[in-house]
Length: 97
Image (cartoon, rainbow, N blue to C red; front, side):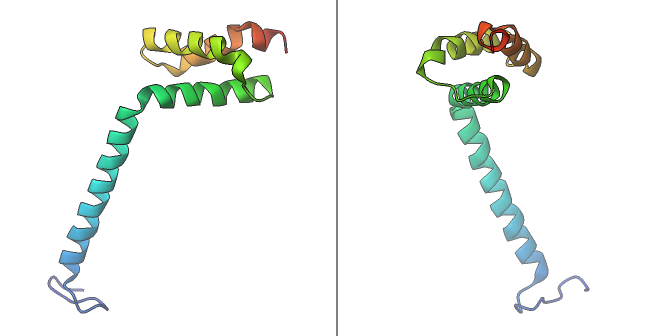
Protein backbone atom coordinates (compact mmCIF):
# COMPACT_ATOMS: atom_id res chain seq x y z
CA UNK A 1 0.00 0.00 0.00
CA UNK A 2 1.16 3.48 -0.75
CA UNK A 3 1.90 6.04 1.95
CA UNK A 4 -1.31 7.68 3.10
CA UNK A 5 -3.40 4.68 2.02
CA UNK A 6 -6.31 3.57 4.11
CA UNK A 7 -6.61 0.15 5.68
CA UNK A 8 -9.80 -1.87 6.12
CA UNK A 9 -10.94 0.47 8.91
CA UNK A 10 -10.75 3.52 6.62
CA UNK A 11 -8.20 5.20 8.89
CA UNK A 12 -4.73 6.15 7.72
CA UNK A 13 -2.35 3.23 8.28
CA UNK A 14 0.48 5.42 9.56
CA UNK A 15 -1.68 6.77 12.36
CA UNK A 16 -2.70 3.28 13.53
CA UNK A 17 0.91 2.20 13.61
CA UNK A 18 1.91 5.21 15.73
CA UNK A 19 -0.89 4.54 18.20
CA UNK A 20 0.08 0.87 18.45
CA UNK A 21 3.75 1.71 19.00
CA UNK A 22 2.88 4.31 21.64
CA UNK A 23 0.65 1.78 23.44
CA UNK A 24 3.45 -0.81 23.37
CA UNK A 25 5.93 1.71 24.76
CA UNK A 26 3.53 2.67 27.55
CA UNK A 27 2.96 -0.99 28.42
CA UNK A 28 6.69 -1.79 28.45
CA UNK A 29 7.25 1.26 30.66
CA UNK A 30 4.72 -0.08 33.14
CA UNK A 31 6.36 -3.50 33.12
CA UNK A 32 9.81 -1.99 33.72
CA UNK A 33 8.47 0.20 36.53
CA UNK A 34 6.81 -2.82 38.12
CA UNK A 35 9.99 -4.87 37.96
CA UNK A 36 12.12 -2.04 39.30
CA UNK A 37 9.73 -1.42 42.17
CA UNK A 38 9.47 -5.09 43.08
CA UNK A 39 13.07 -6.18 42.59
CA UNK A 40 13.33 -7.69 46.07
CA UNK A 41 10.07 -9.55 45.62
CA UNK A 42 11.14 -10.80 42.20
CA UNK A 43 14.55 -12.01 43.45
CA UNK A 44 12.98 -13.76 46.43
CA UNK A 45 10.32 -15.42 44.27
CA UNK A 46 12.82 -16.51 41.64
CA UNK A 47 15.09 -17.92 44.34
CA UNK A 48 12.18 -19.89 45.81
CA UNK A 49 11.26 -21.27 42.39
CA UNK A 50 14.85 -22.28 41.73
CA UNK A 51 15.02 -24.02 45.11
CA UNK A 52 11.71 -25.77 44.45
CA UNK A 53 13.13 -27.15 41.21
CA UNK A 54 16.51 -28.08 42.70
CA UNK A 55 15.09 -29.74 45.81
CA UNK A 56 12.22 -31.47 44.08
CA UNK A 57 9.78 -30.23 46.70
CA UNK A 58 7.91 -27.09 47.71
CA UNK A 59 9.81 -24.45 49.63
CA UNK A 60 8.14 -23.80 52.95
CA UNK A 61 8.47 -21.74 56.11
CA UNK A 62 11.30 -23.96 57.32
CA UNK A 63 13.36 -22.84 54.30
CA UNK A 64 13.00 -19.13 55.05
CA UNK A 65 16.52 -18.77 56.48
CA UNK A 66 17.96 -20.53 53.45
CA UNK A 67 16.10 -18.21 51.05
CA UNK A 68 17.11 -15.13 53.08
CA UNK A 69 20.77 -16.19 52.99
CA UNK A 70 20.74 -16.80 49.25
CA UNK A 71 19.05 -13.44 48.59
CA UNK A 72 21.71 -11.68 50.69
CA UNK A 73 24.46 -13.43 48.69
CA UNK A 74 22.80 -12.36 45.46
CA UNK A 75 22.66 -8.73 46.61
CA UNK A 76 26.41 -8.81 47.33
CA UNK A 77 27.17 -10.40 43.94
CA UNK A 78 25.04 -8.00 41.87
CA UNK A 79 22.27 -10.59 41.36
CA UNK A 80 24.32 -12.87 39.12
CA UNK A 81 22.69 -16.12 38.02
CA UNK A 82 25.94 -17.97 38.65
CA UNK A 83 25.80 -16.85 42.30
CA UNK A 84 22.25 -18.14 42.63
CA UNK A 85 23.13 -21.54 41.20
CA UNK A 86 26.24 -21.87 43.36
CA UNK A 87 24.33 -20.91 46.51
CA UNK A 88 21.57 -23.43 45.78
CA UNK A 89 23.98 -26.29 45.06
CA UNK A 90 26.23 -25.46 48.02
CA UNK A 91 23.29 -25.36 50.42
CA UNK A 92 22.78 -28.17 52.91
CA UNK A 93 19.19 -28.72 51.75
CA UNK A 94 20.40 -29.59 48.24
CA UNK A 95 23.29 -31.76 49.40
CA UNK A 96 21.07 -33.73 51.80
CA UNK A 97 18.20 -34.45 49.38
